[in-house]
Image 1 (cartoon, rainbow, N blue to C red):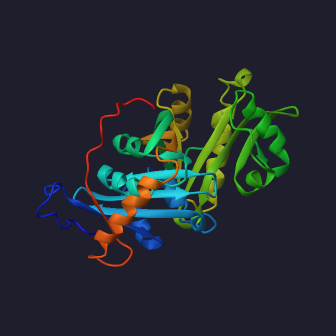
Image 2 (cartoon, rainbow, N blue to C red; image 1 turned 60 degrees about the vertical axis):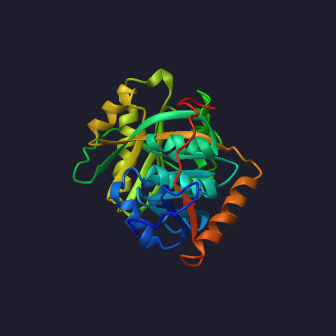
Image 3 (cartoon, rainbow, N blue to C red; image 1 turned 90 degrees about the vertical axis):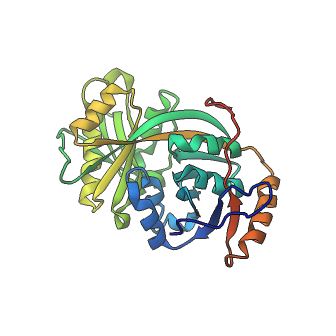
Length: 314
């Protein structure tokens, strides 16, 4: 990695360091850059897995504040992930903001001022990432059932009971790992996965939900335990999930299973401020012209401080 890059000797940005931005399709390089906190970077690591990698674009920025990685992916819906130095994240999204609308599945709180320069940020969630390994996992036994594609109607109906996402297809459920608990023919608790990436030694549990009338009975713990067990048995040495730190019952359930709290994570809905992409296109043109001095396919961006847009949504 480049620790320092040249500075301008004159002009209005003379004291501002430069960030070198480039796209990478080198999965070994991406693994190395994302290895600092694998749990935080789990969504990006999972997209290095074949079947997702071809649907993802990875951008790297290197500069004096450190390196950053931004991923825009489409296999599981339009998704954005930001990892690393905040000013590096800002440099990347100023040139490559991705699709008009996407879901920010992973960002650090320190990234948000930079992201607000490029996007309207809405429906922000302040979460915490947790993870468990086979050595730490403490399973909770109980009757559960492995769910298949034919169960998609019941799964969607359960999520829709509180206006949750209810657009899953039978193929999505069949390719993922879902477990449920039934009361008769009625599905009352479910847990599934967002990412299953055994080649990256990581998986992400998600979509844990229990019918309101059945909460407090430990059902979510049982279905999460079943999903976690299968993921570990499949060869995913580390299993992660994301939880609201204010959700005390969920935190207790996951802790009981051996999950440990990690870094804070921000999730949000993003909409590009420049919907037509004119500004980023002009900036890319200038950045590529400057980057030609360093090598092919390189872009140079001045480090910058975000404008004060406040800490709320816009």
